[in-house]
Amino acid sequence: MSPAEGIALAFPGQARIDQRSCDALKAAKDLPACAWLHLLQMYWEKTAKAYLAASGTSWDDLKSHAVTWKFLEALKRSGSLKTNIGISHQEMIAWIGQIQDLSAGVEALCPASAGEGRPNAEYPWLRTGAAGDVEVLAPFKYGFDDLVSRLNSIEGRRFLKLVACAMEDPRWSRSFGFPN
Amino acid sequence: MSVQSLMETSVHDESWGSIALSPPATPRLEPSISASARGPQAQSHLHEIAREVANEHLALEPDVSLVAVYANDVDTQIRLIEVNATTPPTGAVLAFQFAPSTAVPVPTFIADVTPKEWKRIQRGRMQLPEGWPLEPSFIVERTNP
Image 1: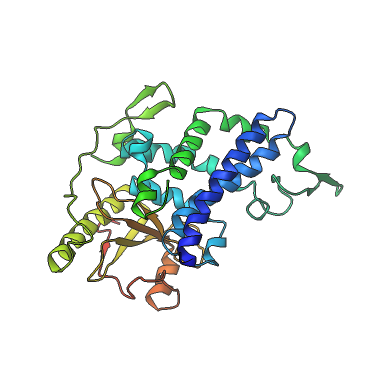
Image 2: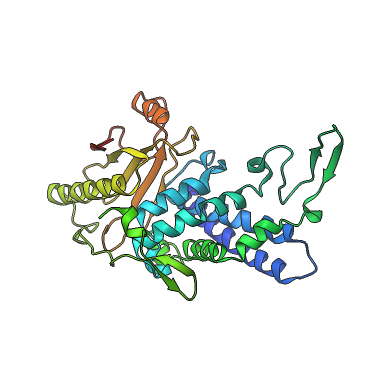
């Protein structure tokens, strides 16, 4: 197996493990939301990168964080996955239009995408008040209530369905000779 | 019928809520290119399919102004660079690979770049993914900006 083939197989493989870990942490009711949200961000990013890795994208370019937005844009036009989800191309375009903002919210759970002083699912951050006072905030103390609520809505269910279909598209795996 | 008008009607889907409804898409392209069917005739057919796909993408996405199609003589893939004014700049050609479908019977690569990045590609200052031809086979531009 060439390094390129190894990379192309590694991304979807790791995405599936992250998804299972995410589901397990979500089911553990005594853990804060940041635990499973962190893994959701990671498996969504790796799923999008799997479609990049399959095209022979260089290792350095696979480190980019602006991948999920571009993936949704390309997916919208390609119409790929519509059969797996069971919708038409036009419905798929509408779906993606509805979930793009939520997807950006999930992407922003990563500190590099969130930006300095912004909530993220991994590291503590500092918030400076109007009077110049500094407050230390941590993911485990931050509820992410808005994001969790959106993920439980129709918009969120569509987003999670699309990510799951992207991760488990047997036609995509077969077309590159990958095991499902 | 425009994409916008197709989105205006909707139905209720029990699993996923209200979704836009449109007539089922009819495949317009013949799924007949195989890895063994190479040569000038297959190449011409592939270009025909690629042109259809490029035009469809321009119709679907108002922010895409140009689609450059890359193919060589032995290709069974469609590689597209799409110039999109709203895509985030990354300084790299990030090409997503999609599986063949009934409408497009070969793998399709789609890479969105900004207008500035497209200029850099044309000047040879931004690399294409490994294995891509250096020059596009043809370019489809929006005729009604």
